[in-house]
Length: 233
Image 1 (spheres, helix red, strand yellow):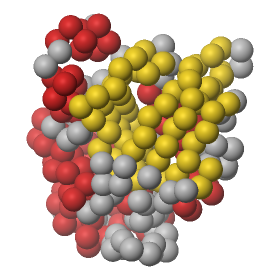
Image 2: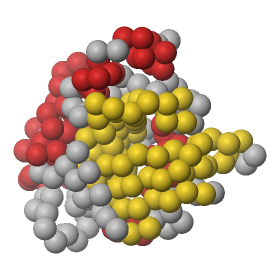
Image 3: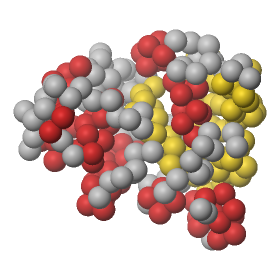
Image 4: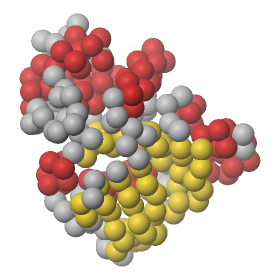
C-alpha cells in the first residue's frame, strides 16, 4: 500500500532524513520507533507532503506522491494525525467530525459519526462539547476520528500515546486494533515501546534520520540491548 524508497529530506542545509526506506501493507500496523529528534515526525511530514523529499520515491496505492501537494495526497486516501492534534477548539465534537468528512471510497465502508461514536464511546458522551473543553486524551481521540471521517485507506499517527492516561491508552489501543481489522493500514511514530508492542506487528528503529533496524515486534521485544541502544534515555 505504501512504499518509501531511499528518501532524503533536508531542513535548509541540514540533512534530516538519510535514505529512509520501508513499506506498509494493507491492514498492517507498523511503528517507527526512536528517541526525540530521531526523525520520526519528519518522516511522517514527508509522507503527507508537508516536507519535500529531495530524492527518493514515495508510492501510495500505486501513485507516486513524492512531490505531490498535501491535499492531493489526502484525497488519495492517506490520513494524517499530527502530534499537535489541531482540532478546532471552538467547534463541538460533532462539528469537528463534519469538517473532516469526505466522499466514500470504493471497497471500504464509509465512516460516519455514529460509527466513530461506537469506536470512541467517550466522544459519544460529549458530541456537543467544544474541543477546548476536552482533555488531551479526548482531543487525541477526536483528532483520529476526524481523520477517519475522510475515509482513509491508511493513517499516519504522530506520537499518539504522548501524555495520555492509562485508561485512555487502553481505549486508543482498542481503536487502532479495530482499524486494523477493518483493513486500514496504520503507521505510528512513537517512542513508547510498551504501547507500540500492544498494537503493531512490525517496527523500524530510526536514529539521526536513518533506519537503523527493522523487524517484528517479537524480535525487538526479545533484544533488550537493541532497545537500550536506540530507545533508552
